[in-house]
Length: 464
Image (cartoon, rainbow, N blue to C red; front, side, top):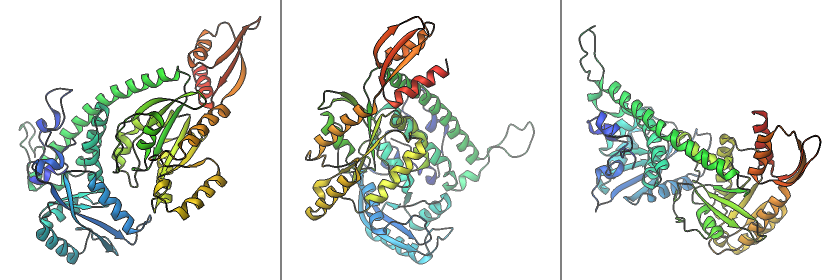
């Protein structure tokens, strides 16, 4: 569970004890942190979802679709009950309250009438706006970033996932210390050696967060090193890696289960998968590959999460082939695909790595549109319309993956000096050697490898 992102608004501030825990491996936050901190086990928090439709926004999607996605985010937290949702048209942003005075009064009336305990604003809200809105509405306010952090905190299961979410949450909370009440303006007395004011409460809170961030980064560094060792071990096994990526709720885990026979959580909700999973697959041709299921992307993904989850997403960088899974039945599938492409580029995915587009959820498309989509996919090439739920089109996808690796592997003959024992050993460890013949000049080695394996070997040779 991630920290209560609104702790400071209660007036209690942060304490060293609440941040650090007693030991390096202790749970960082109490079990009742986050949204659970202000609700009982039995009762759900009644939530009001508001999507600000700002005319000046550069990237504008249909407000109705954006609101539906926000409702889906709220539904991803079982402790929330959405009692009302609405779109608020904004000609401009009010610096202090985000909304105009009339809209704030209207929202306040709804909060009282519906017994709302939480207002979710689908967009960025500055710390000052959040503090002012909470005072005016008389309830907790959470923006899009805060809500996504809550979801990630609720779903993370592995030690690495928990650490990553906690790190992202701390970065978010540090910027929101201004939300606290006037107790943050108090000053603690200094020792009196020099004179002058002591440390303010907000400085103390910020220092405590910074110290905890350092601790978390140290723990994450250990996890990252372990993951790197695992990747190095996998490189020695001559099995290609196929990564499933895509927008959240596109059906990646359902396809992963269909391909591998695994039992990864696959539900019709946003961010059902957070922790990466890898499984071996035997393709129809008999070739063995490793499939990787990854966390879903979303538009306006919090920068804190992108940074914190970079180690996990590095699995995508190791892939020999990427399957971009799209929910082809979604009305904004093109916009979602653009968001995924943008995030992949920001991660630094090698442009030479082949990418298949997998048009999933074909079973949800109207029959007339299905025929047009199938024809379009055939004309484009590298596009596979499927239904991971029913299995339609999956055999063709697996066959194409097998064919891609057959085509991608090339044969070359290398001449290595007898003194280059390390270079020869690397080739054998990678499992790419097909024939080896010694002569008066050295080892003549015939290899069959993928572009990634070749690039890694050349890089290792250059750094020897």
